[in-house]
Image (cartoon, rainbow, N blue to C red; front, top):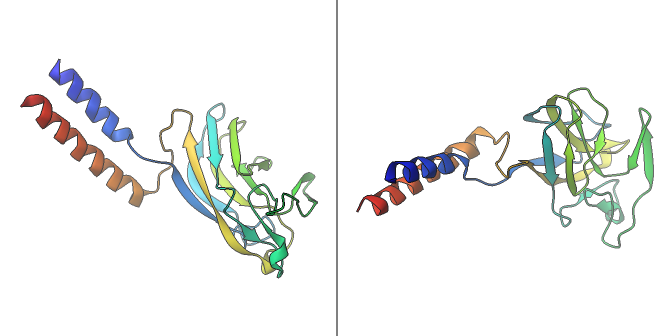
Amino acid sequence: MKKIVLTALLMLSLCVGSYASYPVSAYINSTAGPNLLNTGVYVNSGSLLSIASQVSDTLTLGISYEEEVNADGTNASNTNLGAYTQDGQTFTYGSMVGRIGNSPYFLVGTSYNQVANASGNLWLGCWDRDFLDNSGWITASIQSAYNFPIGAPLPASIPVMFLGSVASMFFRKKLVS
C-alpha cells in the first residue's frame, strides 16, 4: 500500500505547478509589428486550450494614455477603441489575439477556453494597425484542460520538478516512519 501511495505522490509531484506565463508586448508582438509571440506551446487540434490574463494588465495604443486597454480591448470605463479589420478578420483594437500555426487569428481577450481547431505552435499578439506607438504588455497564462501547465518554459519547469521531488521525499519519510 505504501508503494502505491508513494508512486501516486511521485506522479503528482511531476504535475505540481502553476500556469505557464508569457509576456505579450504591445510593441513587439503587435499583429502590425515585427512578429507575434511564439509561446513555444504546441497545440493539437481537438485539445482544450485555456488562456487567461488579468483584467488589470493593460497596454497602451498610441501616444495618449487615454488609449490604455486590457486584453479585451476595453479601458477602465469599459469602453473600447472600436474595431479594426485586417486580412478579412475584425477584432477590437488592442485585444489579445492568438493563432495556431498558420491558421486564422482568434480572439483570446482576458479569458479564452475553447477546443483548438488546428495543430501547431501557439502565437499571441496585440490586435493593432500601428505598433510604433504602442507600449506595455499583458501576461498571458496558458493551461491545458486538466489544470497541468503546458509548454512551461524550461527555467520554470526545473524548480517545479525539484519542489515536487522534495515534497514526495518528505511524504515518503512521514509514511515510512
